[in-house]
Length: 265
Image (cartoon, rainbow, N blue to C red; front, side, top):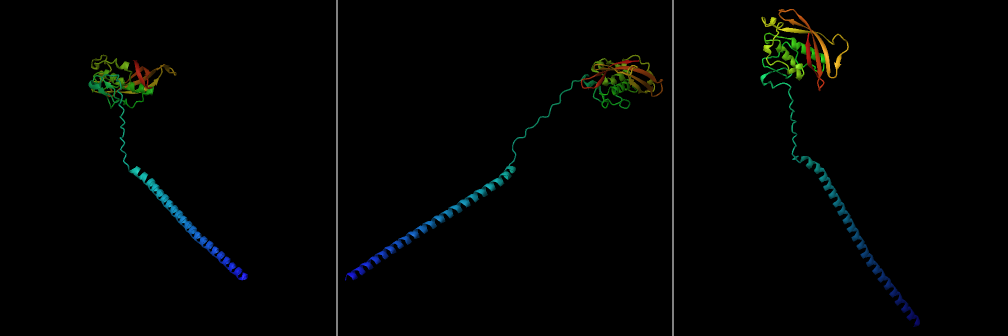
């Protein structure tokens, strides 16, 4: 009897243990299920969030690239509406003339005004003053003597006309000393032979030097030059004339030379 009770009690105990084990197993199974579900849900959420973030970054990068690539184009296509500043052309400064206005005179090729208007420039007989190198003292001497001693009875009344033409190579002080009435000049003994044939003279420069010395006679801005020349008559109405002239050249502020005085011999 006691043995049966013990057996029965052992069986109940075994059943209870089995039931407890089953309950624990069931609890663990349920708990594991929910844990697994929670883990999977979290993983899905993380994956979704990562993908969304990647899409968002890609979209922003694309927008930025598109904006960056289109910006220069838009900038280059934008019209330049800024007003253009106009640079005013410099007003040429008036140059003071050493001669009276040329309204009642004749213009020489270099722009010098010759007075009176009856004085004409002899383009066919004289050197062009606009091409003479004024910084070359000898060139100035030569052009001056040729212009001063070339007379044309077909256009000149006296040799004073030639003196006025030669003023293009003179200083302003010497220019002002010329007569305003060259047709009334006296002492025309060497000019008159040209009148019957309306002929003219030609001039040949023989030498340009210094008063029988090799060294130059130069003081400050002045330079004395001795010029020897021959004046010939085109119609042979007069024998060729050999003469000398002492020219005092004065250097101007721009480095050019001008005749300040002439002594004819």
